[in-house]
Amino acid sequence: MVRETNRYAEQYLLTHKPSKRSKNLQWEPTTNEEMLKFLGIAIEMGSVQMPKVDYYWSKSQLYGSKIIQNTMSRDKFESLLKFLHFSNNDEQDASQDRLAKLNPLLHLLKVRFNIALAKRLLENDTYLIGTLRSNRVGSGKQVVQKQLKKGEIYGLQNGDGIKLIKWKDKREVLMISTKPSHTTALVDIRKTTPSGERIMKPQVVVDYNKGRQGTDLSDQLSAYYTCLKRSVKWYQKMAFELIFGTSIVNSYLIYKENYTTSNINILQFRESLVRSLLLGSSSENLKPGSGQQSTSQTKYKLVDHKLEEIEESARNIRRRCTGCYEQGRKQQSREASYAAAKKTVLIMPIDIVFINRLSQTINLVKTRNNRPSRQIANIHPGGSVSCSLPDGWSGNFRHAGGTGGITLFEVSVRANDRNVYYDLSVIDGFNVPMKVRAPDGTRLKALHRRARDAYLFPADNSKTHASRAGKFIVTFER
Image (cartoon, rainbow, N blue to C red; front, side, top):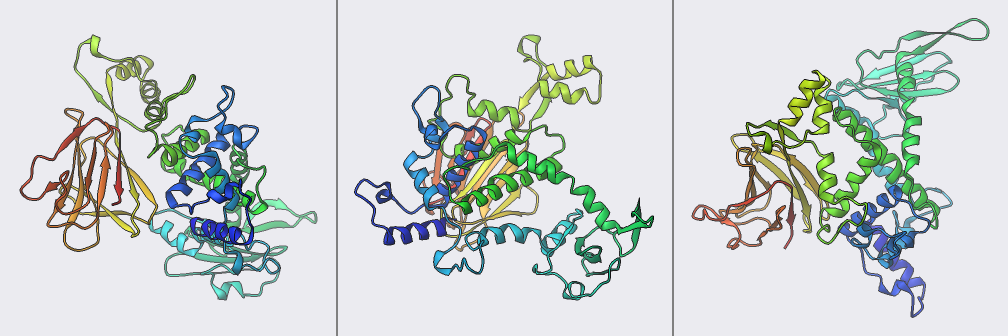
């Protein structure tokens, strides 16, 4: 998106001569970080809707959004919206493909639903059932090209346990499944045709139709918070529906599937995306107005937490936690749940956001003390990733690459004194520049092998810092 938006803006400005007062004269190439903020603003606009786009920058007491105003200027947002593009105009042939302007985006979304995905899900004990287009990458030609008569079924299974099943009813249906019970046998669905014949279908089709009932729910969730439907080009409307509708709903449903104890709704999930995209690096100057909650207040309501019993006087015991009370009521009486929730203190996990502002990809590795190292993610230039650490966690994060040494972000979450101890370390040299911003505002940087803020192994032991719980921002940048 960043590459094609910048390309289209350059193409436009070369072929259109703007007036002296045109906002286009102020255009500057966008960046990955700026595009993520643009997407975050678009999500927020879908959650908090106003009559016109420029109302979000209004100074009126009736309109205006502080979070948007403190993130990006109106002119910059409108310029990005004007030039937002997903493909190279010079390489398009609209007469051959009407979706040429969206093909790169469509491809990006589609590749996550091919046979390679089925294999990855199966490796994680997750089954997949779905329809498959015959021209998709990885589709078995032998199954696709098989000629069938009405009612016939044919299928093959590869060595990974992935099945392709083709069945012909009124038309040919190509299915993909990793469920062991799915075979080429037909089952009686307990219905008959007008002539009295029993209707038979493959079990994979029966199970798929049951699961498809969630499509209506997905459409409903997507329709709740539409954004920027007015004054945008047709292909942008389609792209917004794919990004801010379908993709967010799918992410929300996956989140709910993996965190079954969470009661977060779709609006709260969208709010968490906005906080991640907008408040992760620009929340210092955001002050909540009347009727607004601060970022920290909202965050503490939504994140998971750990409860620890305390032995103190009644004067020091806080009011009961509503969430803990409701959780306790699932297993014990009202009185017992009330007492347990009132004799607890709230211990927040530690959130860490890693941002890559270098021109190289960061191979982020996590090492917990006395345990093998594990790769978290590859963070591409302009990208970011986040994680949470529980109480008692101790270890480090680093980039697994480069030569001449290692730069580490070390952190220890202490449950006994409720502090987080952290430092930047430079060991046997230096491989990537790192900066850290702690929850209390402390900033550290290690930009070279003799960095003053860093623990210089093995001689320096005075660079450890203590902070309260909250969010750490770790940035790879010079």
